[in-house]
Length: 537
Image (cartoon, helix red, strand yellow):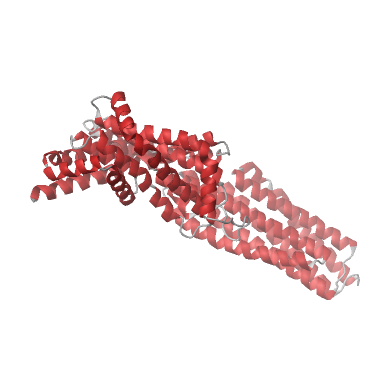
């Protein structure tokens, strides 16, 4: 009884080290890749082969096909990726996840302590974040193999257990049981790499051969779909379709390959005779590559199937956030990039409202005023959503650059919201002008037009400098802001003179002064945005 308990404890400890090492290595690779990872994902096009390569590359970096698929669901939900692009990335993710098994099969557990020593030394002694990330990669690599060694050692006694022998025989004789075991184990561990690692540990201990391992490997691919399916709760229809595509692809691949399981077993045994660990790793890779080659040309039919299973399309326009999604927090570098996109969307919405409110004032158009109020609701929703997301993102592991982005965006979002409020104020003034049938002189309209143009120019400079992290662009705002301030003072004096001369009534004059005051305040907030870019870049 004691020996069983010790075996279970050793096995659990080894698995824990394996999972932690894999995560540490994945996080280190992700941080080291940084902007490169973001750029890779942004390069996804309608070309299916590129999409597959992107999916494989990203998964190889973050060490989890589940995480990649969850990210894809997040992108699809945000409207950044369509189903045709998603299916290629999902197929590629299955190939990328086999990299871990290939690494594990190298049997480096004896020299793993050396990797741990070097990695730990780099993490503790290095000051630069890039070097710390490399240290985490090496440390994670060492911990992963140490965990593998522990699991293999713990499983050694199993080879002498008649009960375990009967279980292996049962799985070998009934491949459907093996598929179910693999699916359930992967669903619990949420990692097909972990299940493959366990199989390699069993193989190392001599407890399992390739023919018993293959059905379990097939089940791994099905089990890894569970995380993505769960992640679609609360998402749109297209996101549900993306997760369902993943499930259909993996189940379909298993069904296709089940009759040829012996052929696959023979093939990998010929590739690596006498090396069961490598056979398991190779079979995982061959299966996923072959599955992709077979089903990729049929992607349009797969999309057709999911469209039948989940009928209907989503509305393109979203009132709430379009780019940010909690699923993307799994990869902070991606999430930080999406926050910038969402903030720019909010800023452009505020700029649009400024343009609409001014047009509404000039034309006395009630439809345009209503549009301003509708947009203001969207701006308020975005302000709340982005701020909440930034709080979550700030708790993630971020590079110095992403930390700067998060810090500046907190303030920038507030400034954008205030710009939206001032645009709404201008719409209110437009309503008052329309109701009172107020008229303005050509000089007054010309002055309003000039300060308005300065203000929109300042706002555009602020948006561009934030989007591109362009300090030179941000500095340009100082000159424009001076023009807004001097214009506001000059036009205020001129309008007061018109009031004295009886060329304008008091009510119309008060609205005019409120208008130029709102423009001046918008200019101040635009300058704040630009200064945040300068300070945090």
